Image: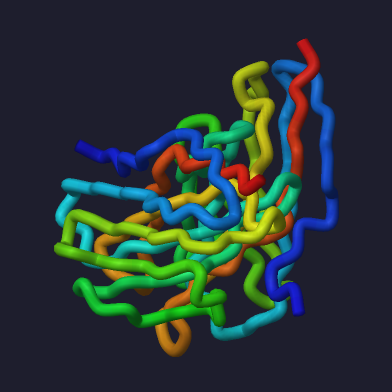
Length: 113
Length: 113
């Protein structure tokens, strides 16, 4: 049962444009969401997070949007840069119950120069 | 110091060998984790330690044996592994187990022959 899903396995975006990565979840107990970036054979690097009490969080070129009613979050990267090419994982956890951080299946983002 | 350090970076072992993976953090985090990641898959949780006590074991085979000697160190002892155990093994830490971002190490790429 995949509780966190990223339906686009890959995405290609022109340099300078906006990259939008999407994530859906099914567990209504999730109240903390994160995005990680990963290069091959390296550990994931934390990018940005959002708590369920907010619907938007911004950090530089990265903005995460949360739509609780739709159980959907998205990561916007503006402007996209070649160094952004990586695999992006969304992840979710619940403040109560299981301590586990559940990862999505990942989206490979390629920025075209 | 915001690093999680893992050693070794690469490990090749036979099915009869015994080896250990090591992980260290000096951020004062009280939760530490072992994840396993296969190519093109999300990280998969193996174990969680909270305040040096094992709090989650995700039904991992006994050929993997975790150890948390103190709040800064986490080991994963390997014995009689199978070729299908070949993967990237990631260590992570966080301030506590709920509602916190995880900091990941760069991983140990394990090959079992």
